[in-house]
Image 1 (cartoon, rainbow over the protein chains, first blue to last red):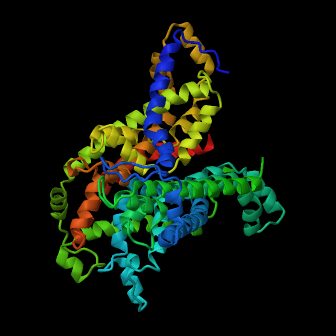
Image 2: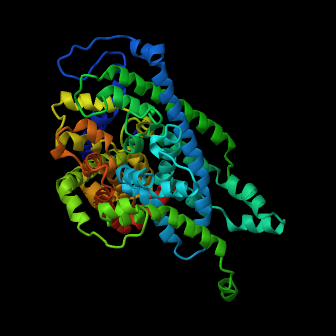
Image 3: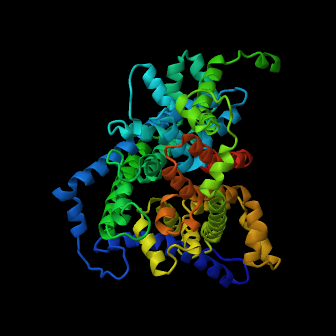
Length: 303
Length: 274
C-alpha cells in the first residue's frame, strides 16, 4: 500500500503525477500499444481512406512466399547486425577499458574522446564515415589500393553490412567502456595481489579474477547492446539509405512500408503491414533480450 | 613508501595502446577538417593529401547554402523544449513512485522498465499527431520527443533514495507545499541525476532524424540533422563543401561536449553504479 504522504495537500501530488503520466501515456505508451491494434488493420495512412479489420492477414502476408524474401532478409540483417556489433563492441570495449583503467597520464582525456561519438550522433557520424569510405578517394580506398585491391565499400552488397557494423561500434563503444570502467574500479586490488602471490600469470589473473568480477557489467553491456542494436536503424539510414537490401533491418522495413521511405503522406504506404513488422521485431527483441538475460544472470558471480 | 611508488616503471605498453585508441577516435574528425579546408579541384587531384592552401571560405559557403542557421534554431527549440518536458515528467513521476506515495507500489517501477522495450511505434506516432492536428507542427514534434523519456524515470527514481525521507517530513512540518518542496529541495539535491537524465534525453533529441522525417514535412521546421542530410543529397559530389557542413554541425557539439563531458561521463558512471 501507499506510504503516508506527509504534505498537507495530497491533491497537488495527484494532479502533477497525473499530468506527467498522461504525457507519457498519450505520446509514449498508447502509440506503442496501438501498434498491435493497427497491425490487424489495412490502415494506409492517407486520411479519408476507410480502414478495415483484416485479422492476421498482415502477419500471414509477412510470412508468405511473395514477401518472404524481404522478410527473411530483414530478420537476418537485424540479427546479424545486433549479434556481431554487440559481441565485437563488448570485446573491444573491454580491451579499451582495461587500457584506460591503468595509471597513465591523460587517461581522462582519452576516456572523453572515446565517449565523444555518442554526442556527435548518427548524422554527423554517418557523414564522417561516408567520407572515410568514399569511393571517389576516401582514405580507406587509398589503403585498399595500396595493397593492389579496390572496393565499392557501402556500394558492395557483401561489405556494406560489415562496414555499418564498424561505424556502429565506433559510435556507441564509449558507453560500454564507461560501464566496464565502473566494473573494473569495483574490483578489490587484494584479489590481484593474492593471485600474484599464487603465481598466476597475467592471462590467469584476467581469466579468473577480472572476467568473473566483471560479469554484472558484461550482463549490463550485452543487454543494453542487444536491445539498442536490435532497434537501431538511424545510422543504417544515414549510411546506406532505407532501400539498400544488404543493410535493410526490420525497423527500416517498417519505415519503408509505412512511409514509402519519405515523410508523412505517400500512396505506396501500407501502415497496417508495417505495424505487423514492428510487432515481429518487438517479439524478436523480447525473446533475445530475455534469453540472454536468463543465461547471463545464471553465470554471474555473486559477491 | 610514496617514493618507491613514484618510481614505478612507466607503462609504455599502456601508452602505446592509448595512443592507438586516440588515433582511431580522432583521425576521422581530423580527416573531416582536412577535407573541409580543400578546394574541390585540390580534393579530386589528391583526396587524401594534407591540405596546402586552406579554403576557409568553405565554411561560410556551406552555412549559407545549407541554410543551417534556421535548422540549428529549430534543433535548439526542439531539444530545449523536449528536454524540459521530459525532465519534468521524469521528476513528477519518479519522486512519488520512488517514495511510495502513489497507489500501485512496485507496478510503476515495472512500467519504467517496460518503457525501454516498447515496439517501434513510428506508424502510430505519426497517426496520433495526424488525428490531433499536430502533424508537421513544431509543438506536436516537441511533445512527441519530450515523451521519449527512455531510461530517465528508472534512473531518477533510483536516485531519490539518497534524499532522506525525514527531509520530506521536516519540510511538511514547516508547512512547505509539495510543489515547492519538489522544486526548492528535491531538484537541487537530485541535480546530478536530473542533469544526467536531461543530457541523455537532450543528446537523443538533437540527434533524432527518422522521427523528424516522419513527423515533419515542411523543410522550414526541420532540425539540423534533417537539414544536413538534405544537404548531403544535394551536394553529394562536392566533398569539401559537404565536409565543411558536417564540421560546422559537429564543432558546436564537440565544444559543448568539452564542457559537459565531466558531468556526463560521471553521471553515466554514477547511473551504472547506482
